[in-house]
Structures are given as C-alpha cells and as structure tokens.
Length: 284
Ligand code: PMP
Image (cartoon, rainbow, N blue to C red; front, top):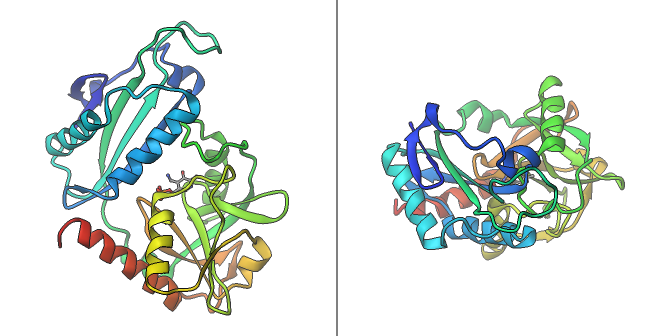
C-alpha cells in the first residue's frame, strides 16, 4: 500500500507527518472520503466542491490546484490497484510552531490514503441496522467537514457499545440532526421522505445531496425538515446515507423496531435509484 504525503508517494507503513503539523496539534484541517467503484471516483466533483467550501470557510489554501489533486487521486488509485473502496484525503493548515493564531506563511499539508472495502454484507441490507440516539454535543459549524471529530467519535463508540451500528444525534429540541458519520432519513406513514435541511447544523452529505435530486427527479415526495426522535420511532421506514454505506435501511431505533422492523419499499427503491446513478458513473 502506498500513501501520498506532501508531494511524495511512500509505503503506507513508513508515511509520516511533522509533529508540529496543525492537523496533529489542533485538528486544524478538513477531509473528504470518496467512494471508489470499479476504479472510478463516484461524485468526485461534488466532493471537490465540498472540500473547496470547507477550506474556504476556514481560510486554508488549497495544497495543490484542483486539477493536480484530481491527478494525485488517480495516481493513488493506480498505485494501490484500488477497484472498490474509499480514497481519503485531508488538508491541514500546515506545519508551524504551536500557536492558536494562523501562521503567517505556511503551506497546507495534503495526505491521501486508500482503503479496500467490500460491498456491505447482504445481511446488513436484508435486515437493516440498529441506531442509538445520542445527544448532539457538536459545535455550530457542522457544515464544515472538519478533522475535529471528538463528539462524533464519542457518539459512535457509545452506539457501538450498546450494540448499534450508528449513533443518531439529537439536538436540544429533540430533533435528529444526522448520524455520527452519516445522514439520517425517515419515511413517514403517509409516504413522505424526510431529512434534515442543510445549513450549519449538519454536514451536507454528497450522498444526501445526490439522493435528494434523484428522488425528486423520480417524482417521489420529499421534504427537507427536521424530524424528532419520537417521530422517527413512529415512522414507516428509516435509513441512513453516506459515501461508504450509500443507502442503508435502519430497522431499530433505541431498540424499538421501525415500522414492521424490516427494510421498507421506499428505502429499497431509493437504494436502487442511487445504485443506478453509481452504475451510470462507472459506465456499467
Ligand atoms: N454526516 C457526517 C457527520 C459525516 O461525517 C458524513 C460522512 N462524511 C456524512 C454525514 C455523510 O456524507 P457523505 O454522503 O458525503 O459521505
């Protein structure tokens, strides 16, 4: 396995960064995870757009020009013979003596890694997954894809320890904002697809964005509004989305079955619609 670190392709086990990289000291950086299927980067431009947004909000410079980053990503896929998996890249404000203020002259750091990932186990799709609610204790700029993920880590670990696959984060009003690393959705008993609106309260998922467009293009009823945990538990269906899971049915929330406890027809349909969009991108 090969990693990319600031201009060099190095064996993964020997790749390292400076101890005064601000990513290491302050989590002063952002990242992206792009799914790779048949060696194709899925929704690459949407991920690069979001990277640009996160960098802009934090006033971190692009480490290399966008077309160069595209080339590096391709080179990493080739060198790692990656057919199916994810490519991870992170950009930090760079290396400087530790001081909270932005350093005057520092070059952004870029690290890229790849990971092979099998498709989700059939059992996950057939049975759906369990989620556990956790208080959303994050900051008010969740729209930035920041490296600083402590609240997400703590929520995911608590969910894992309770036997759940993912944590659903609940704000002070009882509204489910999103998952620790996924977006959260329900289908109401009247058949309406619901997910939290974008804004500073959630990370605008690329999968979320694509699925909103695909659902609308398919004439499905969809509304972007907050839904409460109570509403989710009374919903007909629930599911989550992310670049690594795509569309995954959620069949239990805090131990309570959602609907009849089985993945529902709307979720299935949305997964199919999403996979057709992926297939079109890989030319299958
Ligand atoms: N919300 C959070 C907090 C996340 O970390 C992620 C994963 N990046 C998502 C949602 C899903 O986003 P995407 O569909 O772009 O993977």
